[in-house]
Length: 354
Ligand SMILES: [Zn+2]
Image (cartoon, rainbow, N blue to C red; front, side, top):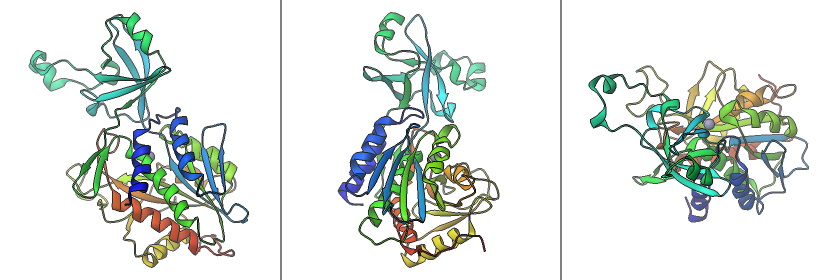
């Protein structure tokens, strides 16, 4: 991955985007993409819609959600400790001991999730300590409530501190790779198409509020009104001891993007994606899903009178922890695959399932 591209990825990972508070990251995307796109629009919901070759009548939408899971301050106690509610699917197991940033009106405030020291836990407590977020607290070093309230207020969003760690030569670990990597990929795919003659209008959308119900894809999908809609998101890698069973679908980091198959996927788009992967010499992994997908492809498929939906998935270890892991090579290959697919669509290509 070249330096300029990697800088964009790292900038995305370092910019907080808790669900419902995505404006700062949209600014980063807009700044980067204005040089490659024909149009950039923000909507009332907070989505950012980046368009290319927008005069073509056939429209394709790529959705990568920009929001990340986080917390919201619910209560500040008399000693100045902060209690929070989850924004999205928080895993309470990784919360104690984590570093966080509170995004207050006055700027970022550093904090830590505290926990009773192991020495003080009774044997019974150690065995049965139930990890309940509502009993955990953030310490920002305030001496009391009054001092805490000078810095933060109830309703402020909180995210894990954005620490990026490079593992080996190709892997990175960071909080919120879900789904800033998907966002990165849909914008990279557009960049890779920017100098080509396309038969379609391409809209790469940085969608909001995926983590609380695919909401940005719902509103932006209606606006874009595409014929083809592809959700680009992370998927569970099974190449580590965290897999849930021996029969799990095999997905490995570094072996290329996942291409889903199942009722959430239009079979013409799926076949074209596979043909595009072969043509672009991009490795891919087929992922069967008999259920509807838990990503933007789900909402896109039933937009208006139906959209030819598909999902390209980036293998991810330790999803929704502070150390989600992805392969940089997979990101580049996902963007390449999507660009090859977009370029392969003809003006008369029909996506009615065959
Ligand atoms: Zn996601």
